[in-house]
Length: 320
Image 1 (cartoon, one colour):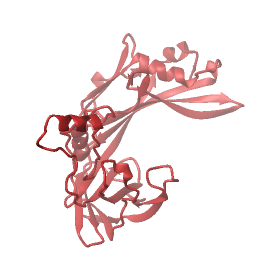
Image 2 (image 1 turned 180 degrees about the vertical axis):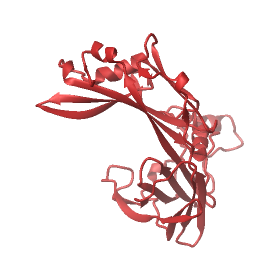
Image 3 (image 1 turned 90 degrees about the horizontal axis):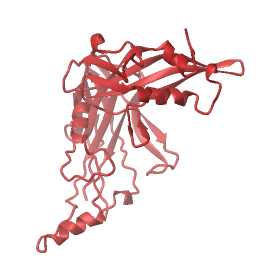
Image 4 (image 1 turned 90 degrees about the vertical axis):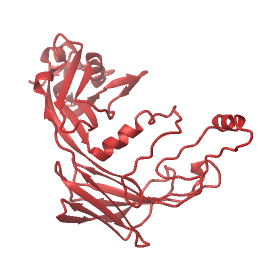
């Protein structure tokens, strides 16, 4: 069976179905194995620490990918990053312990930069020189910041006289995907000391499970008031001393994904759950000479005010 970026295991009931509908032609999910190198690197616009990994595809005797006990992480002769075809950064390697809690025991090899932070619209090229002197490479462009659509955005949450609060922006690229997060900051007064804490507001719920962050495409996002209520009540859950919680303002973070990551999520939409089996999913790769993904994102932040009357209605103390 060929294992490249993703591994698809068909349940026995599906295999039996294909066998039953064809008496003359046998069906097998296995194909001829061809070893390939995989390069994965996501450049983050909110930190100076960047990481990358190089792996090699593998084969197993049966249909279960977890039968492979060998660590697929590989060493390369050289891994470099070019910024705007001018400055060159050389990745260093290190071993990362996984504490025998994952699929592979011991340590895995990763590559990192600890002094690189990109800016919007930077052109980036990544190149790996393999141990057999082959080269795999890719390029990406850092996404562009959005313009906040203040006329369509609520300046205070929860919005007055509405059961939802709206966040809106004008995208520089209509194909971009985004990952949002709304956070409320507060302090707890205890033992004559203040502890600064925060709580995230869920975007939605799947059953009773809150979903806090999820890639999507669009130019606005709505938070229901009941979701803000849920987060605010979590702050003091089980504590009757509501007054000892001082509520500050909130912050809306928006991760803007580049074209490569946006394409990846666009292709993966509808395949990312654990309950769907699809035979036509596209394995996205933008690595020349290999497999994997080289992408980037940038983070944009906007401060949010909280409604003072709303804070007091829950028994909390407004910060000012």
